[in-house]
Image (cartoon, rainbow, N blue to C red; front, top):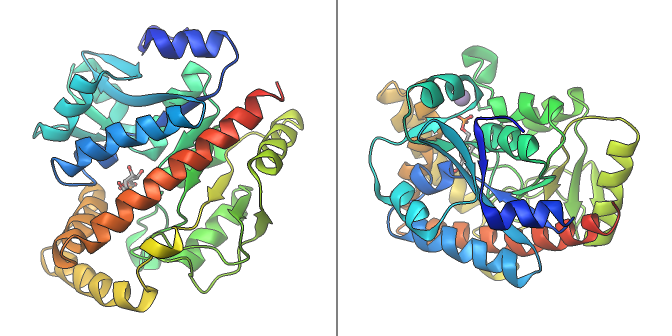
Length: 304
Ligand code: PSU
Ligand code: MN
């Protein structure tokens, strides 16, 4: 085992026993939601994973190690502290060697989950190809990571702060299967609709687990994007979100927000300007993803 990876005892035992384990990211805690809802949500998500038969492993960097599985106190720290690094792949060697606190993005969390032997990862929304990327070249390292690392990702689709069409094209180019659960249309995080047909559809955790197993048995490395539509009762209409997204993008341009700050800025702007409605939807969908992801992990564990 990589000496920079420290696995929590419960997670280690689950992995050794072939039990279902679900990886969870920490950027969403430190940079994706305001305190204290971020901590409440992170702990609730861990509970939902347990209730559905899997062991949660929230991943973050501290004291020069990649930690797989955090205590409630550690989750609280990552939710409360300021100055925690947002760590994508390129930041890992710096933050680890400098012994800084790092909250891991989808890309970094996937890589660390893979080092630990975890096959399934649950989040809210992945990073992707940004609107205007043809000029800015702003494409998240989440996508390049999904090309090479064999950890499946459950998300509520792709948030429409991104260019959903270009993100789907990029995923196709990289050979990453995109499968939506229970409907034909690819969802857009807050909304069950996006205007794009999902490349694939499967309706049960067992069918998805079987597809993951088949992919990796074939020697086809890389991720699968599993899109789990937000529950209908919590959905926010795409047209309503679009107004807020336009305002957020204009504010980002005006303030010259660049690089790794773009996504957190847009998320915060939208949360502040939708009076918490978007935050409630965000919390509901990630809990829903946790239940679905745990069910897939349980089904997958039976196949190996
Ligand atoms: N999208 C969300 N919520 C999030 C993120 C994205 O709806 O919290 C976070 C995830 O950690 C994701 C990261 O991996 O932002 C992507 O950042 P970037 O676009 O800079 O790669
Ligand atoms: Mn970016």
